[in-house]
Length: 120
Image 1 (cartoon, rainbow, N blue to C red):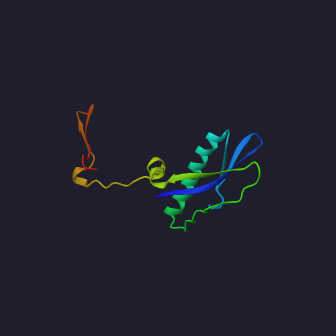
Image 2 (image 1 turned 30 degrees about the vertical axis):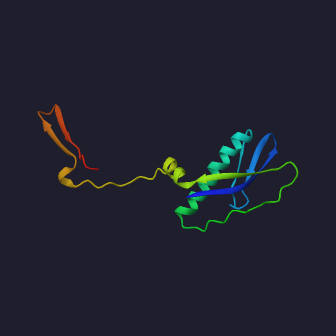
Image 3 (image 1 turned 90 degrees about the horizontal axis):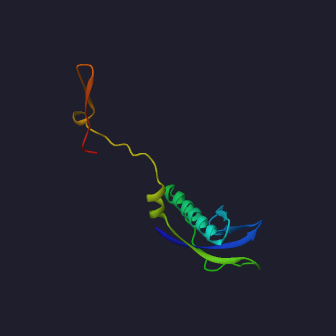
């Protein structure tokens, strides 16, 4: 799914911090604005991906947020399908019927012949 959430950027201790108030605990930072925005996109996508995978409620994005002097309000676009394709590394168990399974045959104790399942 595709989402857009507002985020607040502010400088602190030489870094650019990013907070996404609508997503509890979603905070990150970067060395500069560009880095911080890339990190924010990743953090938002990870937060939403986790919520989708665990059937958790995904909060609606705020229309506006109050900001203080020195803060920047921006929008972060997130695509959980793209995030899932790039980062979901869960193992997939594939069944291979025994008649097409791995067969090892010894030939004169020096050579081995292997047959692998071609249908996966």
